[in-house]
Amino acid sequence: MSVICEFELQSADMPLCAVAAELNTRLIVDTVVSGTTDEPALVFSATGVEPDALESALLGDESVVEFVAMDSAIVESRYRVVLDTDYVEMYTQLVDRQTYPMGALVTEHGWKVSTQFADRADLEAFRDTCQSSSVTFRPHRLCETEHGGDDYGLTAPQREALLAAHRLGYFTVPRGADLTDLSAELDATTSAISERLRRGTDRLIDHTIASSEQ
Image (tube, rainbow, N blue to C red; front, side, top):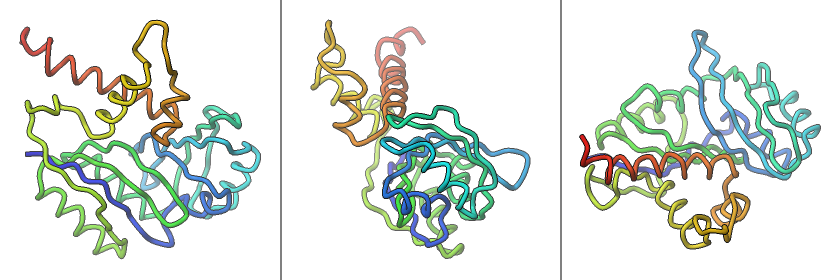
C-alpha cells in the first residue's frame, strides 16, 4: 500500500529560500535533475515577478552556482539552476527511492513537498535521513492508497486538478476555463497544472479503458 505525504522541509539554509524571501514570492520546483556531479540541477517556475529582479536575487544567492532562463516573463518565468548545497539532496533522494515526487514549493521558510512513497517504510527512512541532516521534517497530511482502488492510480494533486478542471468547465466545448483559471483556483503555476492534467489523464486511461486490453 503506497503512502502520499505532504510535508515541509525546514532549514535556514535550504536552497532558494533566500530568493523567495527577497522577492516575497514562492517558487514552484518542476523537476530535479541528478547529474554526474555532486551539484544537482533543478527547474523552477515563478509568477508575477520581474525577470530582472529574479535574476538579481539568484545572483545574490550563495547556493546558486549558475542559472539559465528557459522562459522569462512577468506572467511566468522558468529557470534551470545548478545548486551548490547538500540540502537539495533531500529532494533528489526522493527520485532515487521508490517514490513519485509530485513537486515542491519553495518559501522563505523552507520547501513544501508532496510525494507518493511505495510504503511507510520508505517514508520513515526518508524522515530519518532528514533528521540526521539537521533538516526539520514536518508532515502536514498523510493518506494511504491502494492500487486499483477508487483513486484509479491518481496522486492527490492530479485528482484535485482533474476535479477542478471538470468543475470549472475546462473540458467543455467551448471551454469555460483555461489553465490560467485553474492556476488561480489551485494556487499553482500553469505549467504545474498542465503536467498534473496530462499525467492524471494518462493514469485514468491506464486504470480504466486501457486495463481491459492488457
